[in-house]
Length: 147
Image (cartoon, rainbow, N blue to C red):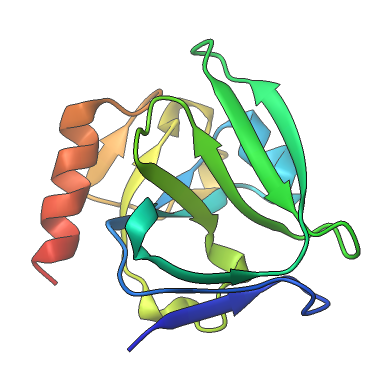
């Protein structure tokens, strides 16, 4: 069953077949992007994006790691839909809040925990104080596959 989502105004719609993992990000960029205490990130393989319709605008920033991060957002309602990070070859990340049913996801990890607001921690077993590394990503993929 595909997992679907959209921006607030419905001008951009998408669907995925499956996801690799769902995590919380406590970095300052996600706080600013969402206007909240953290962002919810749904990582997918590029091939698992089965449909994507609608016009997006792209904003590019340089992450603390030096990698470029490209954010796609709706030019009408400004909802962030997805982003691509150079370090995630062949993958992209969709904004959890853009999905029609966020209950379809289990959050298995939390990154940039050292920047988390004390009242906003969710208590994941997999916690990374700073940026994720390959071992952390592989652990999240394994946890998600086991659900």
